[in-house]
Amino acid sequence: MDALTTAPIRVATRRSQLAVTQAQTVADALSALTSRPAELVLVTTEGDTSPGSLVGFGGVGVFVGAVREAIVDGRADVGVHSLKDLPTAPHPDLVVVATPVREDPRDAFCGIDGATLADLPVAATVGTGSPRRASQLRALRPDLNVIDIRGNVDTRLHRVSSGDLDAVILAAAGLARLDRTSAVTEFLEPDQMLPAPGQGSLGVEAAGDLAERDPDLHKALCTLDDFSTHVAVDAERAVLNALEAGCTAPVGALATVTPAPSEVKAESEVHLQAMTAAVDGSQMIRMSITGNASQAAELGRELAALLLAAGAADLLGEHE
Image (tube, rainbow, N blue to C red):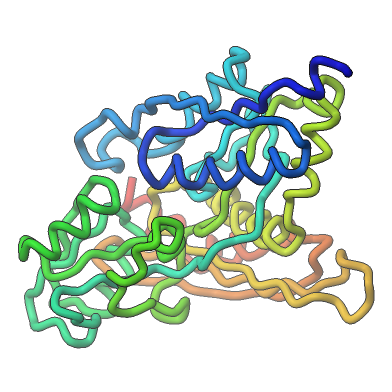
């Protein structure tokens, strides 16, 4: 038997509990598909070690650099990312081979003593490290005191349970993967708060020549790739790329894919919504577009052009 077909699949990931949990699901799936063992390669990224606001030191790619380095230098075969953290610009040596089935893309409101967003009193404090969430939250409730926070899921939730904050907003997907949805007091629907491009999705990245070097693993990754998720995140990330905005910019995008009545998946319909806003919530531009799944990225670029024509560049310039 070829040594390559029995070699362990090395999966690079950040060390946080959520990142490890996400990577382990991918590792287990790849192991089941290939009948090969899989092991995690734990790395520490810039975003994990910098104590300040993500916006303050750029934010773009700070959670992915070390994972990518592990693939490039041969310590890992694949890397698992939260897709919303992955820069939209292509990497010269790596490609996203798989986007597994998406978890809930919505944002989740975690309020003190079961409070929902509407329950909070005037001047209540809500924590988030995301300008996108902050801008939409201020548009919904300009009376609230929005606090910039960092930390893992448990750290943020503790700030509510301890009474330090009245609420925090987190990704529903992360809470679900950590079995912490009991902390959610309200799921924020997309018409209230549009999620980040790619939120709830994972991106499994590998070297561009993986198909030639390890066809067994490449085939498994292609099997793991979910068509509807792939199409949706392609459209969403195309918006972000065309706006030339980073993952910390106040930009939201969400695509939903309606399967085609025929067996031709590429004929499925994509409905794409996107927004950008002033961080103080005083201005917001939100638009949508519908088209064919075979042109998902083009739809994203077209919607970005519409946003720019409506003044999105001014709002993004304010963020910079």
